[in-house]
Image (tube, rainbow, N blue to C red; front, side, top):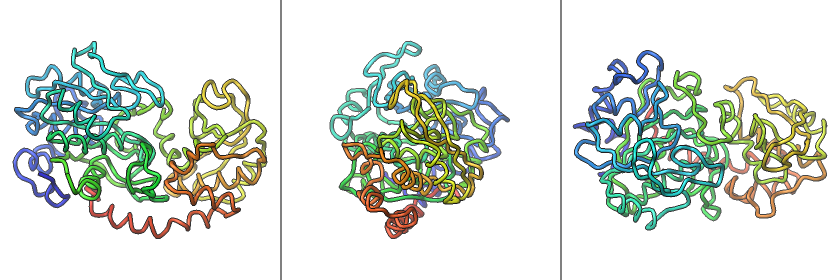
Length: 420
């Protein structure tokens, strides 16, 4: 069965209990799961507190990575595996792998997990029938998803979610999403909406650059809007205690880097804007302790920070900065650029800021160039960002170009929000 938001809230049985009463805000947390520490209880904590009733009698496989933890930082696979109330039989690893040993653009392949003996299957860059065949070969009845997202369209875990939902439908498997917070709040959708002509693994479908949704909300949107011809049998387990205005530090939950270059929740605050620099010849800060906050290249000087500060963007200031990346672009070379300092994250607009930095970088550094493969078009989801900046458009003109598309997406998005 497919559940709309209204249907989910009213659902009966095990799912209804999870969604309404059995693991509500006042319910006890499962033993050993950090009672009293965290204000927010994740979908997994609510599932465990309910005795895994939603998964009873089923062979279960889980799509997860190092972020799939309890409040006392135990991995959920290590918690579930010895528990007789749930039959966990397989693990599916995304980009960077189940245990997180791989860098960007890598995965761990097929292996047996040394800690649990469970078979681990690789989902990275797999979709459609090949991924459905993996689910079939694993022998599971239900595929569970539990990964911490970063809130940006080009962060690949949400497209692992999408691909796994599509594949589970093809394989006739049930799909359960355990919700976790959007670390940069769920207040608003920002930025351009993907043009389907630029669909890739950094943007499969037509959502905005900063989506302002949780993974469970995205799953409901995907199923209703993009997989409607063949929806998966979908159920989601909501969080309790999370508000749309919450940044990650308000949740009381521990942060585990969801990927090697997302070390802190502060990285996620800027990421949906400054990741656009991956589509240029400037460093986006990979190989530093402040990826996506430090940006620069050889030959960039104080003029860039001055030009960016002159825009008086809300909630942010820019410091002239020099750094030497230990890997990636400009490895071992000292480069000049800016450090992005978010001073008021409530007022800060990451996507507008990212566009403003592209505009000012191009105007103040003669060496500015887009990557030859036009990666900027895949990241922004259109050609307009690149062509308008090349034509001399200012920040407001570029941002204004996506206003109508964004308004339309916001209307669709609103139908699938679980938290108010």
